[in-house]
Length: 185
View 1 (tube, rainbow, N blue to C red):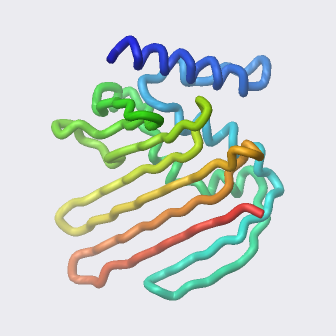
View 2: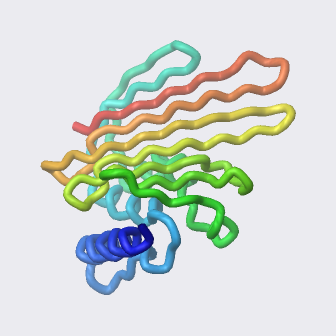
């Protein structure tokens, strides 16, 4: 299985190198896990000035609007995805890595501590087609769970749609449920 993983990572590195502008070095070659931050940086550059039909829901009250974002605003919109990047020195051995058919899966090991519990990357034709993650933080007074998903359009090579769902619970208060989804136009 380790030979398969090494081949997979080398193939992924070759693809990322092919998609990286000349003179830039991707971080993937030095990292133990999928380079979520590097992938987002590449993909969000493609969306500068694009419009999204965004639906926001707070405790059941829904609001829909069209937004046009700059690259910096896209990065802000995808902040939770950036927070899900697990390539930190302190987490270098905290996750298991598994390949199941067309999925690359990083799961937090039971004996490890970390807020990112899982990242799943689905590949189509050797390029990420979907990314999902689960972040969970909890202590005696507070619990927060965030689920995120982003899907690529295979024909355009750009982000197609995404969603974030967060539930926060503070002791003695009702839970707060936030859901954001976007469809690119």
